[in-house]
Every structure is written in C-alpha cells, then in structure tokens.
Amino acid sequence: MSTYLLPVFAIIIGAFIAFVTKKQRSIGTKLLLSFSGAFLLALTLFDLLPEVYHQIEAKQTGFFIMCGILLQIILEFLSQGVEHGHEHAHKEDKKFPWVLFVSICIHSFLEGFPIHHHNDMVYAVLIHKIPIATLITTFLLQSQYSKIQIFGFLVVFMLMTPLGTFISNNMVLITEYVDYVNAIVIGIFLHIATTILFETGEDHKFNLSKLVVICFGVFIANLI
Image (cartoon, rainbow, N blue to C red; front, top):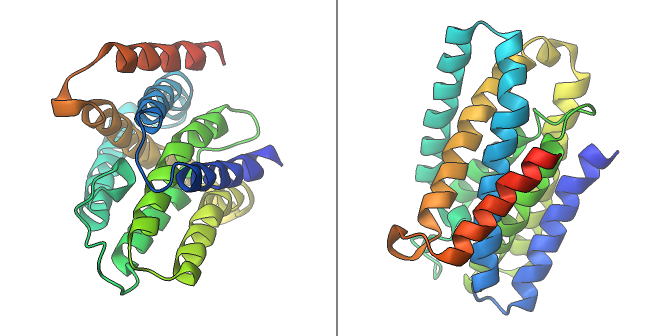
C-alpha cells in the first residue's frame, strides 16, 4: 500500500510547503531539490539500472535509456522547465496550461512504473516529488489560474504516479514489457537528476551547502 500512498503524500507535503513559504522559493527548497536529485540519481544507479540490465540485453537497454533521455528533453521543452523552478511560462495567462499539464502528467505517470513491492524506488520518487510539487504549486499560485484549476491540476498530478504503479504491476500486457519501460524511465531519471544537480546553483557554481546535501543524498541512498 505504501507504494501507492507515498507519492501521494509527497505532493501533499510539497503543496503544503509552497503555501507555508508564501509563494516564494526558499534556500531550503533549493537544497531539498539538490538532495532529491542526488538521491534519485544514486538509487537509479544502485537499484534500478542493475535490475534492468539483468533483464534486458545490454545494447537494447542502452537504446531505451537513450529514448528516455530524449523523451524527457521533449517533455521539458513542453513544460518549459517549470518543475525545475524556471519561470519562463506566462504566469499572467489565465488559460489553463494544458501543454504543461499533459507533459508533467506523462512524466509523473512513467515514474510509477519502476515502483515495485520489492525495491526502494518508491523512496526515490517520494524524495524527488516533494520539491517538484513545491515548485509547481508555487508557479501555479503565482499565476492567474483559478483555485479550482490549481486544485484540479494538483489532484490529477497526484494520482498519475500511483496509476502508473498500478498498471505496471497488474496489467498482464504491460508487465511483459515493463523492463523496457523501466529502461526508458532510467533515462528520464538520469536526465532530470543531472539537470537538477547542475541547475539549482547560482551561475552553475557548487557552494558548500549544496555539496553537503548532494553527498548526504548519495550516502542515504547507499544505506537503503
């Protein structure tokens, strides 16, 4: 049950942080984002990548990982990087951001596929989604969208990862190809984690506090 509930709690916690910080990006949020990127990258390398390489021929695995990287680049082009804290979207636009909504939901849906009862990827997704939910909620609160639109956006976004987990674990047709989907998700995780690590610092420079939380994220992932 925790495999379905923890990603939901992550969105709730992230949205709560956005409300508490009064729509402002804090240093704590940036450091949490750096920690989440390091934690996600480490668990992907320690847990998910060896599992997929064990199930699929090596060259095929590399191909699908590359597909995942390209897919994430496309999704970030559509979302304009709002989930990373970029502010390029038109916040004054009152029209519902369907392109942003669809791209983020696809990303969130695919995140649910590598979550199984026997692995620890649910913790990587949990830690990853908290700061992302904070940044997305902050962006929505700063926009001109109605409260109903913001609430609907967050609810659907919240349910997409558990939906992906449910489908990957219960649909026979999907479970036959889940390792290939997981390879694609690895590519997504690799791209988004490295993007977070290199873009959360000012002028792409590493400071001491960021370095510490990155090392701490890798250390915790190694203990799990």
